[in-house]
Image (cartoon, helix red, strand yellow):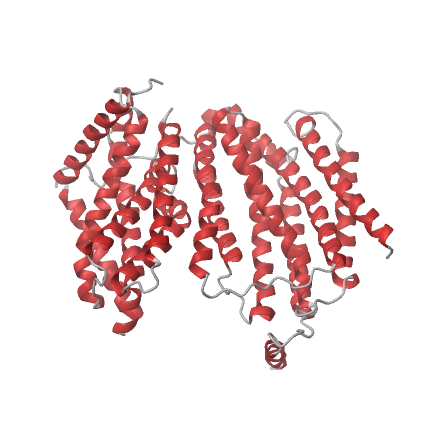
Length: 231
Length: 58
Length: 275
């Protein structure tokens, strides 16, 4: 395997990412469907839990991340299905594109998509659950970014695997959900603190967990993804 | 009805020192352990290679 | 029981267990591969007898011989089956991790077969170990499930490895199955410390540990005997399961044209077409 120099790796990632984003933009219908799915999930939580605004406000962080996680399964599943339909992944691999560049571009693309979803869900959440962003936009944006990246890295690896197996629609969430529990936990807790205030300064430790999780799984994905898609 | 009473009697003693009795929990636990190990052994036996069904080409 | 007897018992049970592990590894090489003509029956019978005998002794020590615990009375005796099960589960999953790494470095059907076996056996011990933990919780915490960090982490790991087994079942190409399950196995095992820490933090406000407060040396002896006995059982289970896996692999790899292919049919949802 040719060892790419760092700059050419980044350039490849950029090219691949631009391609994926362009395809996403051209097939906006899918993006719209994802947004509405996530919105519908948020709404469903309100109905399932009941109109007690205090309970909803307290758990809003959890609901946001559950909605994002459910939407991510759809988004991740699609990101490799597109490749599979036209066997374009083989085309990508035949072109001198480092498999690791494919991983980075796919994972970044998925993360960006999820962050976009998160950004769109926030005003809805504020309205539905009557929450206030007590700690300000900065920490909130950081939480959403870290959480989405945490879902995206292992999700991309697992999506590449599941898209080639039987029962792939069940296999991806089955693989991803237990893995992602620490990140879900941290992201939901951090979001709750951002929304409701952090008198005991716990946000730092939850951010630490999220950052650690991201470092480990982006690293592992970078290392292992080539083995997943090689023949 | 008497098991509920027994359970509450048990729970009432948590935190106040020794828990009395509770042997039904112990037996349940040990039985589940033995049953799990036995059932798994059985499943290994049923799947063993060399049996006609397991080795037939189909 | 005199102190000498206790020491003898400790040494003997450890020796029996470690000998069984070596015998198991040896049989794994000599008897398990398909086509082996070695008559393993005497050795297997010996190991099984040792396992059952030691288990019976351990259970007797745990149920009858050891004294009640100062705070938990008799209920603590569940640790004599719960703790060995958890230890064996962790051991099996650790070996699974080693196999997954090993397979990616040097592919071999034997490594893959061992990975499959350790995951399944790990799930067995972890599964009933978890149930036993919940049963122990009822009289001690008042509830079957207290989100205790150790049990919660184990529950998460069990679901993780069930997913691993599902992946193995849903991939028909043996080589892809081996590579992908190695990747998933590595990721799953690396997740264990992360899960452990995060659940501990998450629960750190509410924790009341329910380990026995007293560490009576007789209790330690009983626990060790039970643990060694369970180790022999683990070895036997792994050996048999490994042999089954190797036989299955041989059947698969010898008849590739009989297997359905792995490429699922194209989905007709036109997702890649412009809206």
